[in-house]
Length: 171
Image (cartoon, rainbow, N blue to C red; front, side):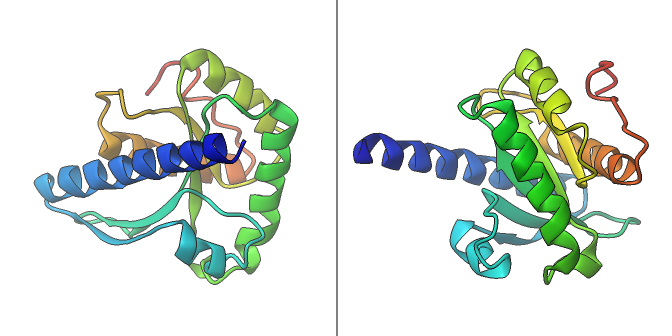
C-alpha cells in the first residue's frame, strides 16, 4: 500500500511540475511571466493543511491583473462525493486564507472530457471559484490558454453564473 501511495504522490508531483513549467515557458513567449510558483509543502502551511492543492502559481501577463492559480489534479480515482466536499472546502477556506485578497481560483484538471462532465456535475452545487478542465501531461493543449480560460470560468461560477463553457466545447 505504501509504495503505491508514494508513487501516486510522485506522479501528481511530476504532473504539477509539468503544468507550471509549461505555463512559465508559454507565459514568457507571450511577454508575461510565472511570477511565483509553490509546491505542496508550502501550500500545506499557507492553507493550514485544511486542503492541499497540487500547486499554486501567480501568472502575470501584460495588461491584465495577476492570476492566482491553484491546481488540483484529478486522476479519476476519487468519487464525485469526495470532489464535492473538496470544492466546498475551497469555498469555505479560500475567503479566509492569506490568499483571500488575491482572488485565487482553482483549476480542477481532469484527464478526459467524460471525467470532466462527471466532476462538473459533482461540484456544480458549490460556489467555489473553481473551473473544471481537461488537462494532463499528455495533452498538447496550451497551459496558458487553459489558465486564462479557467480564470474567466471560475469567476463566473463563483458569482453564480455557472458557466458551462468547458462542457459546451467553447474551450
